[in-house]
Length: 31
Image 1 (cartoon, helix red, strand yellow):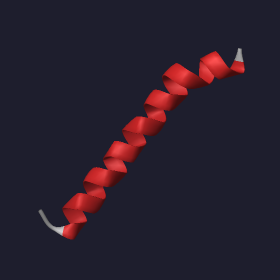
Image 2 (tube, rainbow, N blue to C red; image 1 turned 90 degrees about the vertical axis):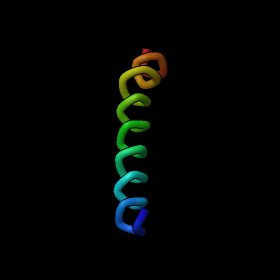
Image 3 (cartoon, rainbow, N blue to C red; image 1 turned 135 degrees about the vertical axis):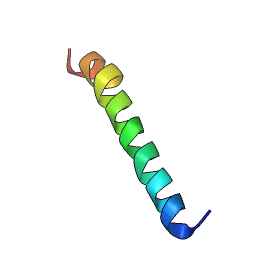
Image 4 (tube, helix red, strand yellow; image 1 turned 180 degrees about the vertical axis):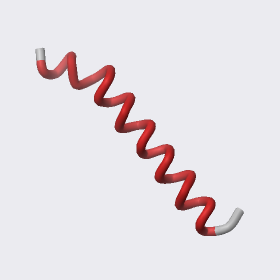
């Protein structure tokens, strides 16, 4: 894979991780 594809994959993975964090962990922390 090219560098651009790795960067895109990393960005998508990071975005998914952030969404999962906000959906599952933030409510537990905020309450």
